[in-house]
Amino acid sequence: MAKKETKTLIKESLSLNENQKSMYLAIVELLPAEKQEEIRQIFEKEAEKRTEIEAETKKKKSEKNSAFMSEMESTYKFEKKKAIEVDEKNDKNDAAKLLDDLNKL
Image 1 (cartoon, one colour):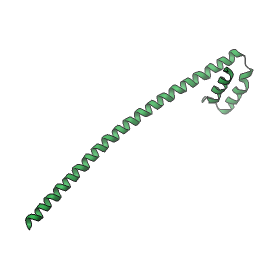
Image 2 (cartoon, rainbow, N blue to C red; image 1 turned 30 degrees about the vertical axis):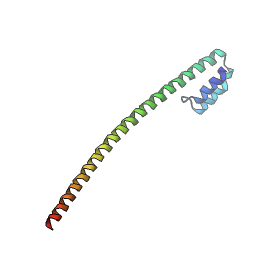
Image 3 (cartoon, one colour; image 1 turned 90 degrees about the vertical axis):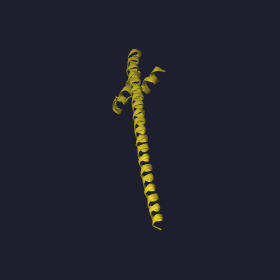
């Protein structure tokens, strides 16, 4: 089980290029159990660190998205309010013009 786990960790490693992965995969079974365990622990630490980094990146991305959405919502509300004010002003001007036109009759 540990050998398969070690091989999986090697294959998923981001710190090794393909040639290095091939070399580790070829020699891992030839090493004594103690060395295999050392290698497994090294790659396991890398996998754990990668998981931590991915979680932190996902959290930061989510926070940025939330901040962006909040800003967009604020901008939308401001623009909507501005548009309503313009519509109200235009309606008021149209009503005033209509009253002037009626008074001229």
